[in-house]
Image (cartoon, rainbow, N blue to C red; front, side, top):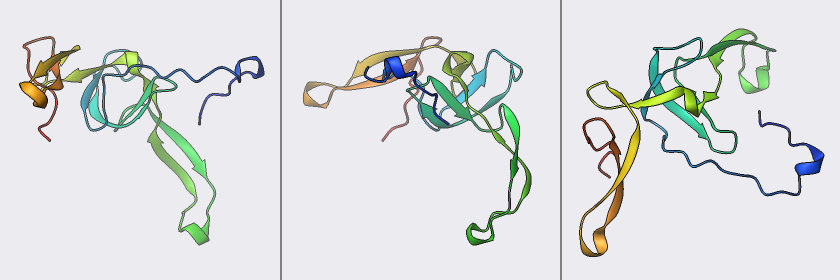
Length: 127
């Protein structure tokens, strides 16, 4: 489901967006028909600037049965991707916020962590 590139632009390199949202983040939809819904990020598409959020932007897909793959036919509902600009990350307290970065640690163990602009909470899970 990638966007078709016009022939006159096929020689150009693909541009990857800088995305601050990662898989498994909890986000809130701030624009569109699903405004106000929250969900977990299932997939991030950096080439097209879109995210797939669990339970948001549901569409119906008509599928044909395929017994060799154990696929039942019928009408199935699934998520469709929405623009990254239409979501904001949620802190553990449920506050929608923008994302900033801060360096933590000292010496050779310096790492860059994501922080919430509201409240300064660290958004990255400890790995």
